[in-house]
Length: 235
Image (cartoon, rainbow, N blue to C red; front, side, top):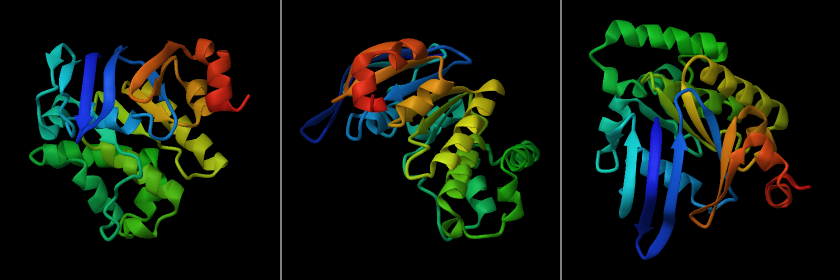
């Protein structure tokens, strides 16, 4: 479904992505592990069109997308749930969700159906639909951010650090929700510093360091790798 070949990105004078190649198959849930500053967010922004690669190619469902703008990439079926949530704090929950459907503004009945599906996934959002997003707890804001990213009905969902700053119990609920989204037919690429939790729900993973892929393998292989344990799991 998604294929990156020798992707390089330079911002200013700094190489943030250096020769990344990876593949995500349809229906997979794959994690991207790495410490803060490893280049995970830059890679996600590159896939979603917010950063233009200086070298290499990115294909989604066989179509090159590395030269397309973000709106066209969203219309093709790729949605990014960014690190830090990036909500509109003074807008209501409902308005934040509808912002995620901006590429479907002519599909009013279908958008309304999707909104109902999001409310079923996160009932708390329906209960507080008119409440300002900025008044929600961290976990509720993350639910809203994920819900907003699903409003465009993506086939590939990029989740950038969804557990950041959340309590362990909330992280567990978020990860269970991500598993459910994947079982519902959405392919997921999950970026995480919480390696243990990410590997527990993923089938495969990649490890990114300083903009390079340094390891890849099944979730079991990475969870058992001593370098991964020491760097990301704390063993």
